[in-house]
Length: 244
Image: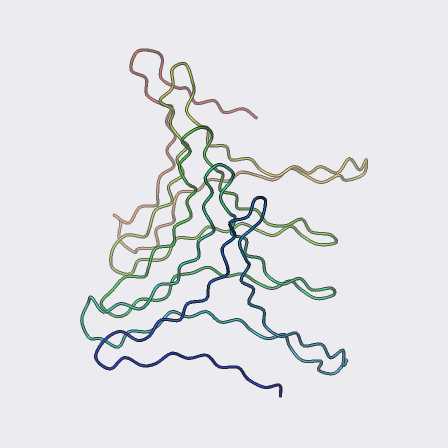
């Protein structure tokens, strides 16, 4: 094995543990950039067909807390790109690994399971506010498939074993501008876009179901399907149009 390089700061028995700071150099020169910080795990460079070895991992972990009080929390991990005075702020890009012949790596973003007296942590995906234009988009998109099926987008809410199951709320944006229209919610089945004269394929369905009730009591009713046009203060309320 190659040699190991370990950097470790001291333990604090009566106060905080020592800090470890890695900082690249600042630049004061015109048209120059501040220094980079590069952290790279080692490559597994053997091309042996039986077992060439793996690339090294990079693990970033905040410190655990062993305290017994509610205020004793685990350390946070913060990733923040650089600010800019005039140009765009720095981007954060997280990609899984590419494979020349196998599958690309998976990417999982999740909060951890809670303890017996708590709730699991929230996962929040939000773009920033825009002070001079349009705010950013949030895109959930699977990749295009060659010789296969396009990947699904699955949104599931967790079960509740004591209270009600969680809701799914889809709400388009409102507008406070004069003579403009609130955002739309569009649910569309996929195209069968092949122009083949024998069997080009069908368009996908849009199916909406109320929830099934599996209770054995006469009062255990299935969920309803309800559709409403929007209310209006002075004009006409919105209509409902169903066309075959």
